[in-house]
Length: 315
Image 1 (tube, rainbow, N blue to C red):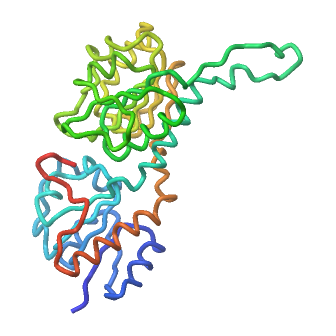
Image 2: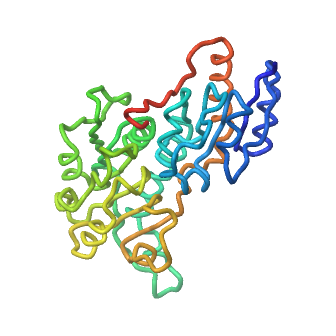
Image 3: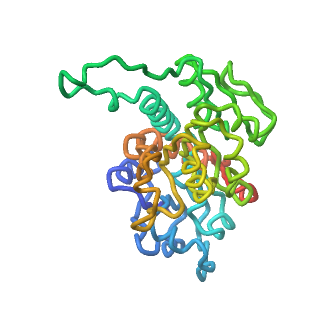
């Protein structure tokens, strides 16, 4: 019997899967209830679609996980999925797939905020005035979470001449030379001119950046969240911005997503809000495919797939 792969990804991706030497039978996972295909497939390739997000708290479906032997999530974070997704066969994730794209977004946010080119744009002769621009060189970029994304941000910030500090859960050295690891998140917050949140969303990291930590920030500091909305207390953020104890925030993620109409983050003068676009996910599909392909080879050889999610840690 041929290997059956059920996939939520786009037709072009699925056609590439069909071209694997094992010639798997690839079927579409139903958009409304992707888990229903568990009884038909050996492998399930998923994405954090609305169906998963809206059923995060739903009970385990009858018959789950069916005949599934492996699940691959195209996203690195698995917080959008129900807990029971992790309680069946091994789950791999797209860890590191979008790290470079997200790091570029972070650097773009830092440069946009620092240089303020729109503020000095000359539209007439009267606007032709000298004005000082900010500098990245010599500033401190603090990173909370030094995984694939945090490491990619660190490499680029160091190349721009910034001083980079970081805090991470595990006592591991930085993969990038020049990063100063600090003892705590509090230390990173207090030292940062640009504070980058790049840690996974788990029960332990919910609102890890709260009012007490924001109170430690430098006046005028720039917070950038490309992790998950849940790691940041948004009400505390607004209060800190209004009080002037924080200078600006660039947010690519919120809680919930999207925010309801009329939410103050949409129009706050000290917030740049983007609709979770930093991963540029279609642009990195070739990288994702290479990872899935390599893990599929291992799976077919009876070896554990790579980039496995730890169900206890949640990432």
